[in-house]
Amino acid sequence: MAQNEQPVVRAHDISYSKRSYRSFEFASFSVGSGEVLAVLSSSHAAARDLLLAVAGLVRPTSGSLVVAGSELTAARALPFGDGARLPRAAAGLGVFERIAPVQGACTVEEVVAREMRLRGSRGSAPDALPLLAQTGIATRAGEQVSRLDPASRARLSAALALAGEPRVALIDLTDPFVSGLSANDACGLMASLRAYASEHALAVVVATGEQRAAQAATGILSLDEPAPLEMDSSADEVMA
Image (cartoon, rainbow, N blue to C red; front, side, top):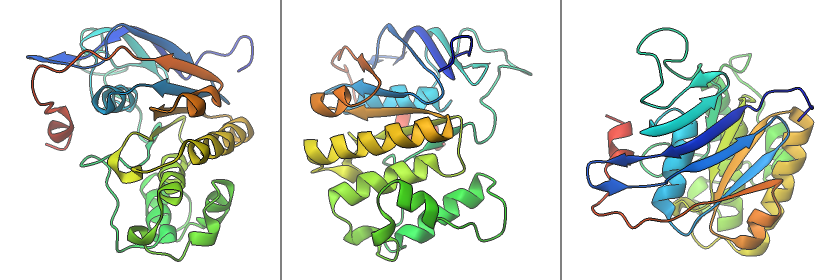
């Protein structure tokens, strides 16, 4: 990030709780263009909620969260006008269980091309192959998603998050979709993401439970993990 350039994402003491459910607490971080932030957490729910907050799908209940110039914290966001919501296509999501799933019967190329169309890529049939090549999954382009190994699933999730070149890409390596991903494969993906973020000047946030993978990013946010007092319902309510 250039010296005078504002971060794409800037958070100060953000927390999220709902009724008797507590998720992340007092998280402060920033991510600039060309940077990759690793959110290190053993709690899938807390990591997922934080990434969804950056996407504008979960509203932090305290603190300040500014993404691409929009304030997204519930207590600070304006009810109408500027700051009320994140601009369309500003944030790209990888695979998130129940929130941004992927159809197992489709091919890798099909699901990424569809995501590119949804995010406004030019042309009725966008070419997904260059993005698949840069994320290291071009050789699996014609395979069904259901047949992919964990390493390829993680790279597909990354390609989906990067589709359409959003301001910030959000990838959850704690999601069940990539269950079984090895530390070595997570580190390899992180290296690919750093190269892509630098070349395309976008911010990337990756949730992971692997210390080695987190150390391969340009920055690390370690989350406290308060135990939820009841089953989290936020992921279901996002789709309501």
